[in-house]
Length: 260
Image 1 (spheres, rainbow, N blue to C red):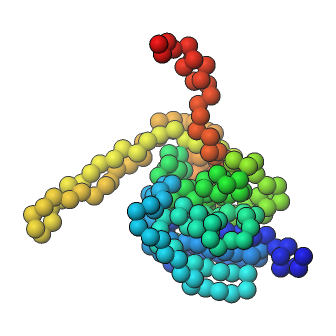
Image 2 (cartoon, one colour):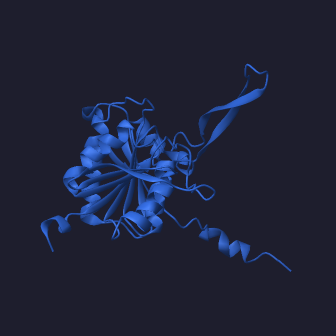
Image 3 (cartoon, one colour):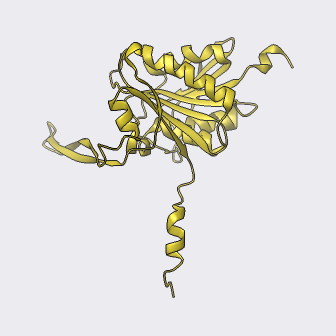
């Protein structure tokens, strides 16, 4: 086996699109760790969760080809990108899948809507150690210095220690200077929900249209073991997620029901 073949193979994707600054910061941070293959959406795909494309053809274009770095844009969702890599591009399973760095938080129930975490969970389904990274800054020109510092630390630990086969990490990073970060907290997902509001407007033709707005409602603001609490206190939050959505505690009670 050659020295190049011994390098970890890392699949990288995101949901903000192949031109996103967060993706470029992630690539630069990961390059020293191994051979990088990037398959990212051609256009922003935020909020796509685990969506896949089934009604139109997918297209794939290589845009960068360098030593230990290949970058492709895929005209599909983040999960499409991962599936395309697994089934068409890669000759073996990657040693790691990394998604991000997302522009904006994916803490608490935002994880259910996140294309960033949808891609990470797709890696998880395929028993590949996977991480989703998000920075709490929605600006397209955000400063990713702090995020890169923690991407490096956490990636190194995952490569050294691995993850259980059906577990991935949801990592959220506060938008503050590195020196001001309080540390890293291993957390559980905060309970809460998005209170959606649809702002009705009228276009020049007199027809109504809607913009989705709203706010996040934290139903346990005082709980100190959650990702939202950690981020509010200046910590990087890490929430381990798994793909089994079964509520095992309810199986016993449901078995007592009379379904006759």
